[in-house]
Image (cartoon, rainbow, N blue to C red; front, side):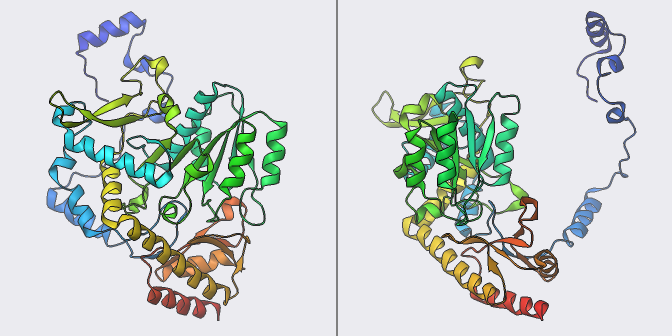
Length: 442
């Protein structure tokens, strides 16, 4: 325990609080959590620590991933790592002094611009912590737009379950009820159930994922038409790579578009750090969480960038704040920007098309071995397949260096694997997987 006060100051504070000792101050904490005996290892020298971690690292294994569910093993251009490692990008913190932070501010401005182009929205902020928190913040923003404390929040069953859990955590002490709409046999939101629900209940917000967690392409036009007919805020969680092929949510009346930027130049890296993107309509700009960089002119008429909107609690009166998000993921957003600039529009489409063609090839090969489709809708590079004893088969393949999808038994889909294929996977890797798989099925 670190106590910054002198014994005299501590005694004075305790006396003011009517307490005798520091133990009294922390008496509300479970005694087991206050155990003062820490079983720490013997201190090591620098060289011993280096050897220790080297031994641990040898337990790591190089796997060939056929997985997704929000984190994808994609090719990252070598130039990207070099550029984001430059000192001018690594060392600055929040660009409070615009005159000393023009490079950082311009990078954020360009990032915001590309997010708007990807999503077909009018305004994007400087980024959020990750896709899950971006969605939760979008739900809070939708609630502020509706100025409601009681209307229901409706989620499609096809949303990433971790994202749904984050939304529920954010709204733990809220009066809003969170409900879900089931997916149809096609693997997309059941439109008839959606409209029936909206007719009967007051719903402030509806959220859908595009493509959804199972990989299927939601009919955003039909959904948007239904949702807006009942005056409901329409939020879309979008895949940024998929937006190079699919019409972006802005064309279908989305009010807020969020998503995860991990696919745009970030490694999987044990779950982070990642970066959430967040875009909306200009008319909602005052409800936007986070911060916004704008372009203007200085007193000499030269182009200048500056923070033009900062709505977190530290910057404005707390009751006016839209969010308590403390900062943007600046370095991760920069990686997204560099990735998009290096690949360009055609390069991004090539990434998507290669992922799609390889996914179709793998799926057909798996079906020839007895795997069956779970849903009948249209998907891109992610899809669920089922097979008897799929989990045992998954475990065996993992030991041989292949992660074939993610088991979905926790979602009630027994013997089902959610499989994803990226442009990084080669035909040789797929063929080798099939050879290993065939041996396990013999």
